[in-house]
Length: 345
Image 1 (spheres, rainbow, N blue to C red):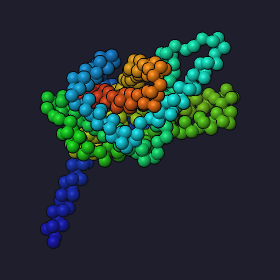
Image 2 (image 1 turned 45 degrees about the vertical axis):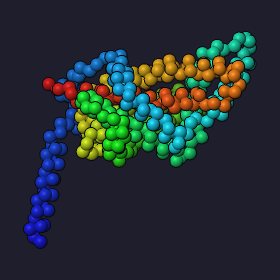
Image 3 (image 1 turned 90 degrees about the vertical axis):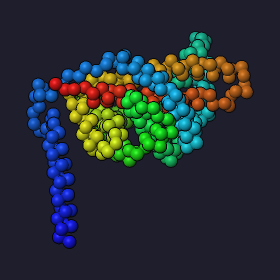
Image 4 (image 1 turned 45 degrees about the horizontal axis):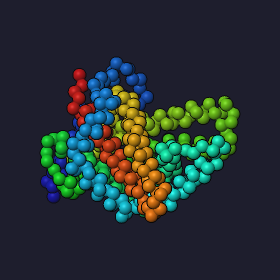
């Protein structure tokens, strides 16, 4: 009995020693309540240009279209079954409101088809048309489908960039093992987003109580909101990379967060600029793809009344949403791989 206890204590001491050694070997770029000198944490990084990175993401996706296109179709089918399409009545209501506004113009001029299409697209996205009428269960399924798509895309990219031939079936079966770890990292991101949520809540209260009508109070609130937003952006930027890192086999959630934080140390501002450029690219994609489709839908339904109840636009929005998730995942993963492959001096 004593020998068994001694073996267990020996194993425990070895594991504790390994963990302490790993923790001590981790380079700390900053320490709390201690001054950090800029020359100690400058880390040059030669990454691809913004436009080059965006184009490279398209090239990777289209190069592996035989894997990504069936994935999009699978996610669309699962979304229709578990979450559902956007209610066609919501889109019709937007269209009726726009037509009434159009007819009430004092000048009597009518909006062009593309102008109406643009307003419909903006109103559908900004008012939450994609998620209107969702129950709590449907929202849970939507988040779950997002995580599944995220992990499957990373699995496909990891193996295709390693010159390994895989099938979509292999990705769907094997990519979901770190799902629980991904949920934990997502929970950490939710906690890190609390300062931004505080800004949203306090701004709503300030508008209702006319608190911002006084210039001095408005300035104080602006400084307060800016600091909280910067804090959330600073924390979430590394956790977004951790969502990619946690998909690696055998990597625990907090270890992935620490690894992502180390990778972005001294490079966080560049990564945030890259994320802002990603938002711009996604907006351009939606405008270029969706505006002609909505214009075509308006034109067809203007003289073919039998097509009025068919949810063409809802299906197109769902397809574009799936493609957007794949594009964002590929964009972040390529940058993560660039960080891993880059050798510090």
